Amino acid sequence: MNQLKSDEYPAIFSDYIDTVTRDIREELEDHLTSFPEFIRSIPEEKGIYRYAEEKWTVKETLCHILDAERIFAYRALRFARNDMTALSPFEQDEFVANGRHNERSFESIIEEFVPLRKANLVLFDTFNENELNRKGMASDRLISVRALIYIIAGHLNHHRSILKERYLV
Image 1 (tube, helix red, strand yellow):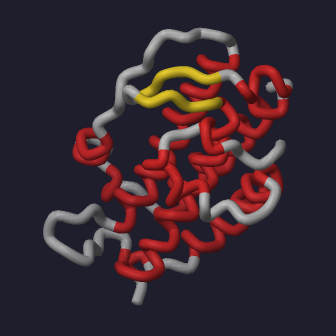
Image 2 (spheres, helix red, strand yellow):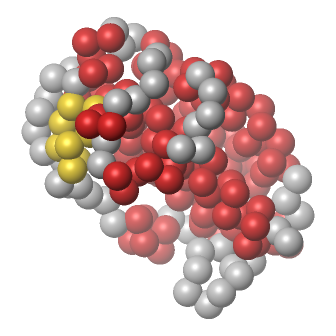
């Protein structure tokens, strides 16, 4: 895939997209090993740690990454298939509050992530250049299919950095 054009995504996603510094396919594939390795490096007792009272726990943050990947991939599929129905935002705090993430093991999070990412890679490989360039409205913002794929990678990178800097010091 080519680098993104500035009109493919709203500026609010720049922080995520800017974390993708190499070929997007390589980045997404690398996560298949690097993200499980990262999760396995976290001590189990840190799973329910939060660095401030109103912040998510480590496990909640990890599961938020999974939920968001599903939602971004769904948006990409809809727009790639030329379904231009405007898509509503998702309330991430409600997803976290109702996910029972702290009951899960790190290994179960990995077991969910790997097939999710593999399935998304297969899906993304079916998109041709025309489909990757299609845009749709999600959360009241115009965004391309290609940008959504970058956002999936960048969103994971962003939250992994936050976990390293604020939770695992």
